[in-house]
Length: 324
Image (cartoon, rainbow, N blue to C red):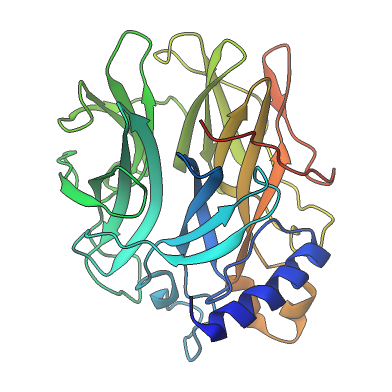
């Protein structure tokens, strides 16, 4: 880490604590789409995240170049997820200049990352997108295993889960099919067979499947809050009424809808890591481009009779436990 970034990291850490945010990227201030994973043998947790260039100047309101052209950011926690320190960007041999929305699972001692890539820096949303597979033994050095053939040139936001009967399933957004959530199955995380639409719900992105308290759950960003779905077998999903994080929070950096979440289960507890744009931040009054900036927040999930809820205004210090 350069001396300049180190100074920015320390300054931003103070601002982050004051604002109630969990983490802000010290380079571009555009952290989003967090994926949190234990780093074996070190006692650390790592956060891999989309690293948007929120500080890019000279763009009109329609130009989305700022969400392109960056590598995945990495932050580390040595206190079980309570605080995070910037580590730089991930060295991913993905063969594209734009990296989004990593999802990481571990199987047989190997880490598998499923990463959205975009083959350029574009000023609008009209560009091809794909999901690629990378593996690592240490979360630092990665091997490119290939691009997934999912039957569409506009797929993003992989969420991968081991199935109860064996094998794996990946849920993802297919923009060619109205941005509905599709799925694909694999026996080995290398070979995938698309299943088509797999979630009977509205359009969305960032599907996050997880297992907690004897049920399968999936949280999906529907752009007006986070939709919740539950299942007993990861096959048939039942939508929960309402949305999580649809209403703005009270903290200075949390005054917008919650978006694209990750979930870490720690024993009987589960922690939701989501991002917010800074539409409601005080700085937006003097700088309209400030709304591009985004920060990572944490909240604890609560479950009562099969219904998930969250109080985003309740202060929480994540305790993810010691990495296994």
